[in-house]
Length: 271
Image 1 (cartoon, one colour):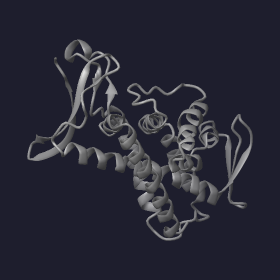
Image 2 (image 1 turned 180 degrees about the vertical axis):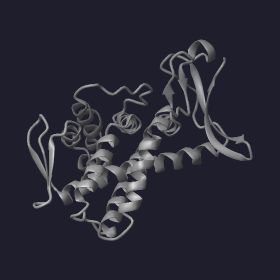
Image 3 (image 1 turned 90 degrees about the vertical axis):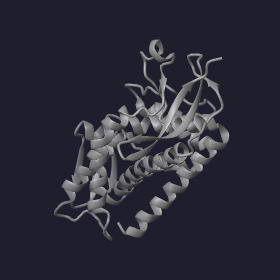
């Protein structure tokens, strides 16, 4: 696959992400701040600080860090040069590696929760503080609660996810129900939902849409987070949390050693 085609995918994805975040910031600015500020429920804190809600929740990111670094290393190794197209002698190894990356990517709690929260805000549901994914039939939940609201609101991000998300590929790989045919250059999958087949080029596009989407979303989230926190001021008006506590979100720069880092803080409003 040529570098120019990868750049086209990158530009398409970046435009869709920027559009979605712009709509969110204009439609529900508080929810936008909670999204980029990594707001989460941390049960057990209410008795100590008055609310179970926190900003800067990074446990999901920490657990995702090794997998994330693995796929970025792989992309930099194989897709930084022109015309990468699964050489015959390494095709099985490369496609199997990409199927591992692809399956883990769409099982990433951090990534899936982020997409669900974005779609919920777009759908007018506000920020979902406790985003719990179902254990079964995740693809139905994802189709109805992520892809559909994004497409209903005519956001390009819904189209991007449709190009990237194929639960049948993940299921076939997880249960060893696939076959890579080097002669026809096709991948045959046989999940419980039925038979399907993808050419190497079709799978490569699905893989690249997925991995680039995750990478660019992480980068865009971090960029917005840092820009807002560096303002060193209140980022929201006071609002009530789901547990009825009046709070306000502030951005600030904090000193750690010789470096300053941007951070969000949730402050309780005492009246």
